Length: 314
Ligand SMILES: Nc1ncnc2c1ncn2[C@@H]1O[C@H](COP(=O)(O)OP(=O)(O)OP(=O)(O)O)[C@@H](O)[C@H]1O
Image 1: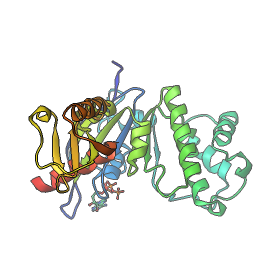
Image 2: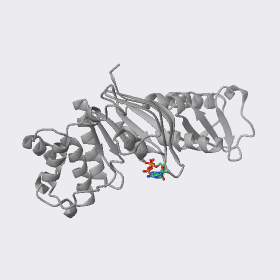
Image 3: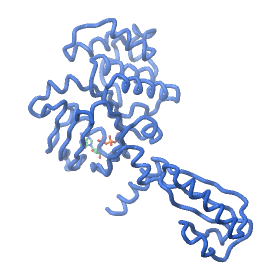
Image 4: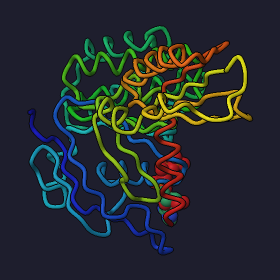
């Protein structure tokens, strides 16, 4: 397994008003992985990123990046970390190219116009290089943020909600960029509200709520562990009860006996095979049906049910 690039232990942040935005977070990120941090508004995602990027001072806990203790040796690690924040804060009056080149200089790297050109071209910003950032569309501004983060060639890149409020085209462009970074071996930590995005891009997913990291796992493992298949089978005529021959299936009679509902499997397609067996068993039992609707649960369902459990437990 590759090197840990970021190790957080017991990371806690209590804001001055007393709000615990991070509650004892342990997280290890390995070189080259794409990690998605999923959580509802106010879960602590931006605070976590801010802590690692030196924008938020943790109340307690330790952070190591590239093997350096970030509280003791902050600069060495920080120079290798890029951040694409949610919003533009500065240099709205600057022309695109100058802002991006400046961002590289900020991290102590020698100017490299060819590299800046390559970045601007890859983000379709080259034609806009001399325009002031404030004159660009929202989506273009977001690309400038990415260009700035890439300008200093980070090994670890944080993307805070990279696709919030952007159109489908730009979202796809962003996914492509993340893919390219994966190919270059850059480690990416992204936060997102779009579960589809996490499902598509990430190798591992962490679910955070109210400052607590509820679960971290490989995406496939999470789906296999918590995913489900749900199938609704419409029966040709209502059943009063289920025959004993079907007792082994995880099924319920619903809608006054006119519908059979199967809930089982594991999000990896195992349920589909079981539903196929169920249909054979129905025919063998002389039960006729008129339609089947099957649905595999997504990361979204897992996310929603986990957060629901968390709320119920609170
Ligand atoms: N500077 C601050 N002072 C006090 N409380 C803060 C501060 N910054 C954030 N918070 C609070 O900390 C909690 C976590 O906020 P954070 O921005 O980290 O959440 P988030 O998961 O990024 O949310 P979103 O998805 O809305 O961006 C929220 O309740 C927020 O109101």
